[in-house]
Length: 272
Image (tube, rainbow, N blue to C red):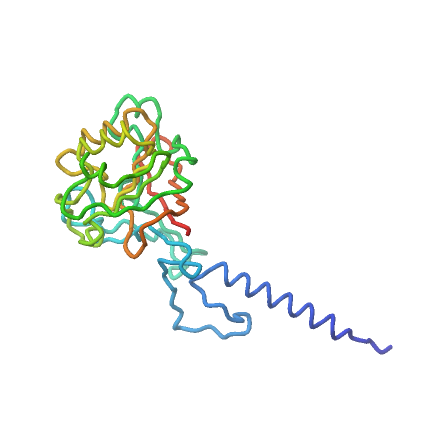
């Protein structure tokens, strides 16, 4: 018996299969979209690492974790923090890594227990933070480059009432402090009077800054205590704010759900 073939049907199926391959590839932006199913393996595979996605619509404002990024009061950087515990090259069925680092490394946020022991004991950890505060419209502003963020500076920025999330870009970004291994205590940040003015005169519930602490070094403990006192303001620290225009964005910050931890590494993006 002669079997007939429906060629339009085969073409349709082939198109659908190829479309699914393309869709799969596009889900992984580090892999160029090609018909990989028919392409021979290559030794020159190289991932594409991006800071901006969607033709300038999505900005990754989280720092990439490296051994040379700064850590608090250290000149040695993070040091090796990632270890391959099982390796396919050594006969394992998969590659599997483990990491060890402070929860306040790189882009991260602070929970109330960071500077209030009673909140730490009560369980106000990174898992208890409100995702409605961490996600929503946000204003990116340029702070004056010649001073810390004082009450005077806060007044001069004229942040409208009703704005709940503000990212402050400071001289830290210009100096590229987060790209230098040695901790620099001269970083710009909030002074106590600036934080007090923010609490008393604005509706801000998320503070973002571009170094390891939102508060200036000399007044960091007391300023943190003030901001975290009512458990209603979340500081997000060590943001990567270079090459992003001042303006209003949709901010999305997702911290790791670390039960019992007073902080957490956080992936933050801005969407136009």
